[in-house]
Image (cartoon, rainbow, N blue to C red; front, side, top):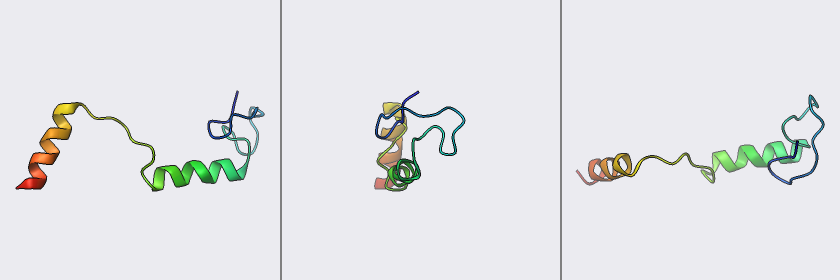
Length: 55
């Protein structure tokens, strides 16, 4: 298995699994906190949200 951040090999069941290190684990958390990762929503839902913001 490879670390999703740096692509290095990860030891299964290791202390930072699924990451290779604490640094990569913290980088992943920072990506979520800064909204770098997003779960795509259907276009209809996005449009409805934009319409609600305008009201």
